[in-house]
Image (cartoon, rainbow, N blue to C red):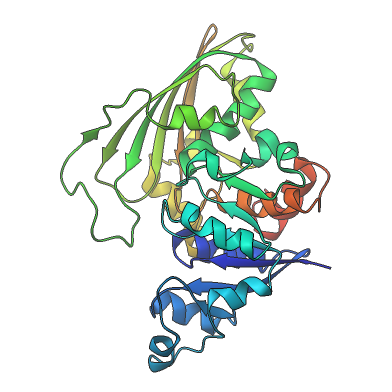
Length: 339
């Protein structure tokens, strides 16, 4: 029997997770929820996704807009084994009692505090920790990128010290009420919340993060300085280690990818849904090694990078795959991430 998945929230993350679930051989999408009629609600209906009304929304508002709905989220929950909470930040914890009353397992996103779940999750880093769990939190987009890179560097070389400067996008492309429109905003909290978040995956990771927000919508960019315990022979060895690991894409210098605009143009040319880039993006000429000091840039597509992690979390919670490698192989094949 496939696992029956409900997605509560059909925005930036929810609609991508719903699409991903619909492609899995061991899962079935039983419904998605929106609070108000919108173009996204119409798209859900057009794709044949059972649509339910969440929050304080009203069924009659959807029907007045000509959008078919099947009821409220209470009815959706009765059809499901697990709910992926893709509601706005901080609302997941408010929804948690409803999921528990419905006897649902639940996956939360990185906008929630770690205590909403039994474990914070990244498929490459700690898949076994989520096996059989009832409440799992997929860490944020930036933390997902750090955790993936850490899973490579810790195992291969050991990490003595890691400093990351995160250059953060100000808003997603569809957002119109966030900024800065013309400015660079430092985050004065040091470390930024990303380091403690990464340590929910790797408690002993010696990492410090600082962050600035810049007026772009495309992607985040990480500037990494890692002191390695067992230095590799060359930067080429590090590049090879990333290339051999799922969910990394390395651009060669001759490809003339100067920054995030070309990264997303590449994704569009690959005909990926919505032009998404679900992998960590590194540049061959952006990886530098000086003795034990490794420096590298990586770009993170905030809209899509956590999508495969949500799929792998479902497999872990229902013991559908014995290890991360097995789950990642299926997820990446169905989502077109295999090179």
